[in-house]
Amino acid sequence: MIRPDFLRKNDTIGIVSPSGPIKENALDEAISILKSWGLQVKIGKNAYNHYGVFAGTDEERAEDFQAMLDDDSVKAILCARGGYGAIRMIDKLDFSTFMQNPKWIVGFSDITVFHAKIHSLEIESIHGAMAKSFPNVTAESLEYLHQCLFGRKKLTYKVAPSRANKTGKCVGQLIGGNLSMLYSMRGIDFEYDYNDKILFIEDLNEYLYHIDRMIQNLKFSNIFSQISGLIVGTMSGMKNGVDEYNGTIESIIREATAEYDFPILFGFPSGHEEDNNAMILGATYSLSVTKNGGTLTIATKA
Image (tube, rainbow, N blue to C red; front, side, top):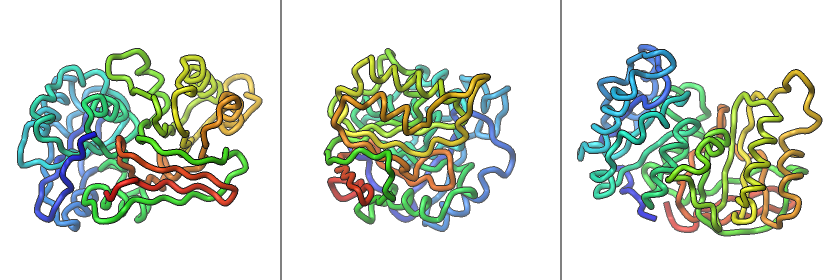
């Protein structure tokens, strides 16, 4: 995998809205924080557009993203928010200049589409807080994003023990993102290659039986027979349908993975909560899950 250059003081980071719309002034705090890190900030010309549930038309959103991909002065691209829309415009993008001059792409949730596409190009990306959510995430979450962008520390994450965990150790490239997006991308030409990977999943406001359906898909399409480890991030706002689902996120996943021996770590602080610690997707990590909790460590200095 190719690792984009880490940022340095006075580098420029671009902000675009490839999915849902944002309100005026929604980027103000993110801009302030990024400048405090010594960065220059460039905003896409269509970043504040509003077209139904999208931040502008597919063409407008693609135009902004393409401009940032092709701009040599922009060293990283931070997505403004998730929502929905990335899948509708990603085929309009030309990644040829980006592949010659890789730069960090940052986001989560709907931005899982970009992470999968970029992984297929063998380039690393960052799963982390987006500009709109800067005011709502913890200082620790922002510090992890700072570390991922600037490469100043070796990335290590420690997670409290859970009865649902499955103990064990593994090493592999970290992939994944939003479970619903991973499910919706099954069968497309840039779907993740899951072989020997550590898979991370998180989700928001889903029915429990929908989660079960998606997890069963991973099982019966043999993804669980390929991965080396599973990390479960925050599963926020899970709910029942008309009929109560007789189970939990933990029981859904443990039942579907019972026949496999890879380690499983629950409660990883990343996803749609204030704890949204950034990770470098595509990088090789070691995962250790014991009765005392879990540790995820990047295998090479980030």
